[in-house]
Image (tube, rainbow, N blue to C red; front, side, top):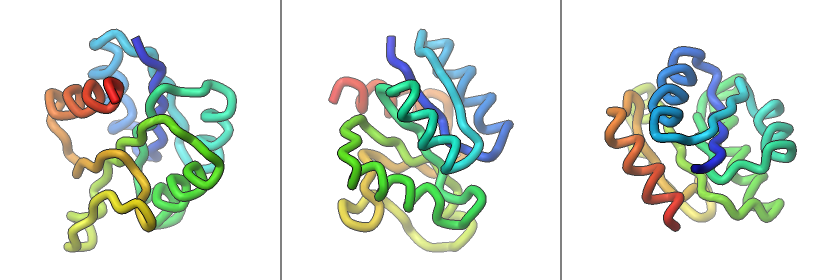
Length: 123
């Protein structure tokens, strides 16, 4: 199946997401922050990136997505975050500000996560 990289600083989210995606047959790796995530992308060349927003800095995931798009990263990015619950604001994909392929609010049901990953991998 696909190689998926999860960049999230919450070990519980990483563990649960990894479990659900490995159960579907995917190879899953993770990184706990933006810097390690960028290094892991260059090394592992994942087919899909699952990205949190708030890590060491409140906008790390957004800045990372912007940097990746500027560098020509052409694989799908699923932003999985609780920023909407934390801030009370609605967030979603936006080509200029949040250049991701799909956006899901945590906590996400396993079936929803699996379906979003399948859809993004099909392109």
